[in-house]
Length: 448
Ligand SMILES: Nc1ncnc2c1ncn2[C@@H]1O[C@H](COP(=O)(O)OP(=O)(O)O)[C@@H](O)[C@H]1O
Ligand SMILES: [Mg+2]
Image (cartoon, rainbow, N blue to C red; front, side, top):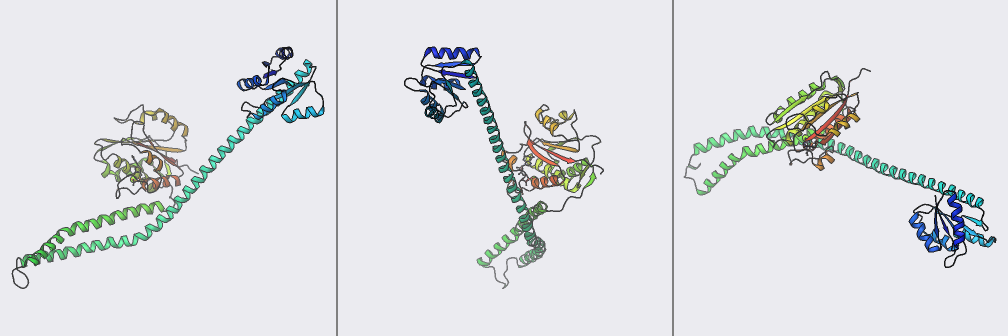
């Protein structure tokens, strides 16, 4: 406890400081008000014992100045030493912010008691301040949390609206898309017949017009136009077909995104699902990508809808293939496990150009999150990894970094929905040495 004694009289100051030092307080001294103010600031004084009558600045003015200051260092307890006892005088002192009086002549006993009261009040004040800070910190945390929750709600609300809208749009576009698709096939058949007729006619006409005359320049131009049309038609038809194909793909994506049908859970082998998905992606994966499977032996079965989970893996593998399509030698590493096994560290990032010591903290993360009731599938690739933007938006529908026509931006958001509805989780991150890593957790099938 730091106590400052303010008195212009050296003898009085000495008396007080000697008395208080013997009581083991930390004592400072000032001979006038200004000196006192600067010591209070620099030393974080807790208690001021000041004489009332002093030249230049008296004790009351000093007290007022102390109260005017923003007490950043906590409350300063002020004891005024005086020989006055008039009620008027004492009232004036209290109004100026004096906490207590010591009447002259001072007895050490009373001085001690007064200081102890001061210490008690300062301690209470400190405690109050601490609690106040705690409450305000808590309030701030609550406010942040409430804002986050509100944002999440708005986001999920928007997603739900988007889902309903997507379903509506998919439904509306599906019909015209189907008949364009059907018509283009018929159109192509008809065109083939017309084309044959036209070609046949052209050969038989050779260079002679219907009227039997030699062709005019005008009709020669017409012939050239026709020849051009005959030549261009197949690529026009192809264009329409690939356009409708693209519409169909987007519609399928939208339909699965909006599909509300709940998964049908059965007991199933996760490795079989992964192998089936790999088979489905065979075409896009087989050229430049090698696949390493670090499958856990005797892994427990998962509780899942195999078709839906297969779709998730297909989406991830296709994305990996897209990400690595410019790389001559790409890798996909697939790890399955169910509880933290000591050898998991050697499994992650194992293949060739994967750094085996990559990311030890990530292993701890798995460790911390691990849950014996879940199986874990980790899929890593050696592509360029997820961009900052992709890391933030990957689960949002329609987020894609691929060129128009190639990406729909629905794969990951559908996958996220599927894994969620299975009571599992899916996260995406980048490996420290480049490439993306997806971690999927799914509940183990348990007999009820
Ligand atoms: N393995 C990956 N490596 C790099 N980027 C990826 C990977 N997987 C997904 N992404 C990013 O996430 C985006 C969204 O993926 P997705 O939802 O499947 O939509 P789409 O494949 O149609 O773009 C992709 O456009 C891409 O930017
Ligand atoms: Mg995709």
